[in-house]
Structures are given as structure tokens and as C-alpha cells.
Image (cartoon, helix red, strand yellow):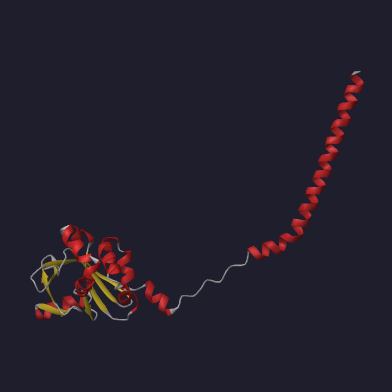
Length: 209
């Protein structure tokens, strides 16, 4: 009886192994098929896509004043306001050159929220555009040229695109800028350079009177 039991187990094991071999052969056949195809697949996978060359316009937009402002975490409020005023195209694509004095977000935080709400109200778009143009000057005035002119003249008056006057002076704490109403701000970060000009950040908001 034990002999029959052992024989039965041997037969079962043999059958199982045979089936595994068959299954293995089947898998092998599949593997062969895959292997036969794999060189082609591998060749396809190894094809490296050609990196698209940026056009001159795209390169300029990447290096534009608008992009520099948007990527600067200290200038997010001014960036958001510029978007609201639909003035991004000028600073993103026009050649300029422009000099832009940009109040930092901390400076806007010192302005009453009611004043900010009134400024960005959709019905006040013209006023918002004028406000922003009050910070933009045609021409390139980097820190070196400003310092040189201040050393020569004592002060420097620049006309903004809003038609207002910005007066720059050299103080012990750095370059100071004053608007037509006597409001003053200090240049915090100078010479944020783009393809179409330069940005100087300010520690106070001007032109709200």
C-alpha cells in the first residue's frame, strides 16, 4: 500500500514538473518572441528627442522684466496688480528699455486694505494703469548710472510714463526716490536686469495720494 502511495506521489510530481516545463516552454516561447522584438523596442526607447530651440521672442520673454518681477517672491503684489491691469505684455515683450521701480510686497502691506481694494477695483482700471505707469521710466537707469549722475548733479529727476516726476537723491542709507507729492521710498534691491531694462525694488509705495 505504501509502495502504491509513493508511486502515486512520484507520478503526481512528475506530471506537475512536466506541466511546469510545458509552461516554462510556453513562457520561453513568449520570451523568445519578446526578445526577437526587444532590439527594435530598445532602439526606439534609446531615441533621444531633439530639444526644441527657443525662438528669439521666447528667449526674450523668459528674460523679460515681467518674468523677473513674477519670479521674485518679494514683488508678488506688484506682479499681481500688473496682471489685473493687463499691463504684462509691455514688460514682457516690448524692447524698451525700461527702468521700473517696484514696491516690495512688505511695502504694500503697510497700505490700508481699503486703499488697495479701491486701487484694484475693476471700475478703476484707468487709475490702476496710471498708478503702475508712475513706476515705469523710459530708458535704462541702472545703479551705476544713477550713482554717477547723482554724484555729478546732486539729484536726478526722471519722468514716469504716467507723466509724473520721480526725484532721486543719494542718502547715507542708499538711493532715495521721491514722488511729486513728497512721498519717499528707498531702493532696497537694485539692478534686477532683464533683456528690456532693469528693476529696482522699493521699501515704500508711492503715488497713492
